[in-house]
Amino acid sequence: MNMKRISTKLTNKFLLIFFIICSAVYADKKIDLVKVDKSSKKMFLMSGNQVIKIYDISLGIDPIGHKGKSGDNKTPEGIYTLDYKNSQSIYYKSIHISYPNEKDKAAAAQKGWDPGGDITIHGQKKGSLSKEEWTEGCIGVTNEEMDEIWELLQLPVTIIIEPR
Image (cartoon, rainbow, N blue to C red; front, side):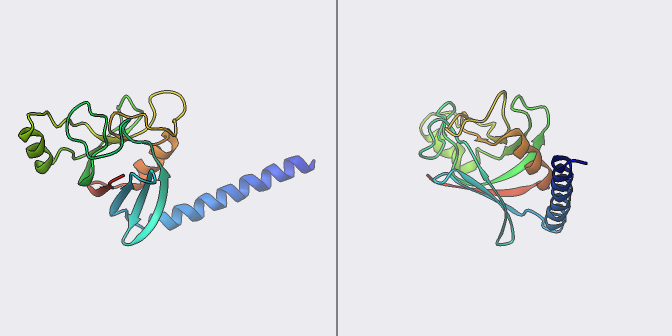
């Protein structure tokens, strides 16, 4: 057996052991909070006060400020609920964010606006994920990350989206 084959087998065994250990660590941790920091473009899956996973994210094309109306391409800010999963999303898979809440609806109505909706955490439609803002107000991750998030989250879960 050549050294390259031995190295590949050892690498594969190491990866399998690493995956088993990581799975065991996550298995006993229920994600009870998702925090999004628009400034750093990071999403944190939390259990208690412990960060379980961190993801780089993409935001709405116009990420500064709170979403106020349909078509403004802003990602909302505030406290919401991740309330259902959609495995048939045009963006691979998605997890719905409960925007707009009553406060959002009232603020939009006061200005004569439609607050919009259908805001999600979602994967990619096609191709690779740009690190620049590319969504229409959602939170974008890679499809591989979406698969992991999908498995880790048992809904409903609170999501806090902090300003940029």
